[in-house]
Image (cartoon, rainbow, N blue to C red; front, top):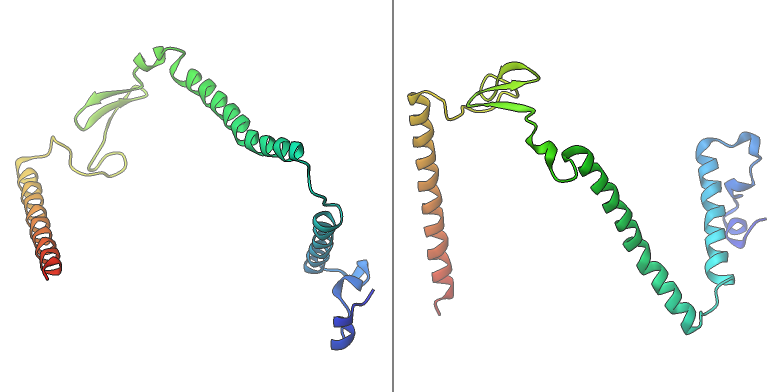
Length: 163
């Protein structure tokens, strides 16, 4: 079936090609055309205004979908939390990760964490005095820059507000 647009420009629609010669893109295009035709039929030919009771019923239906879905998601989350931490948190008392500083016990083995350990990381509180001094100097410099930036912002906003 050719429409007037196809006759004017002199081409045939791809959906009129035989099925045996159709590639994947032709299949998708044909599927899209049929889907658009179905949507047009549903939204234009079968549609009629609902009475007030039907409108209320549909509003309730569309309102309840996320509520009921959310309820089931929360129930699933509660069951997972009970599996992980116990009904009253009794499994929280079981220590799976033990230790302090940059040493810890993971699955019965003592391992180093932080700088040079698991994940690389940064130097922890157990760093030597030299590293602590460097970190303190860098932190103070960062605070100075931040104070200077805030003073500039404050001056700029005061000058903008003056008439």
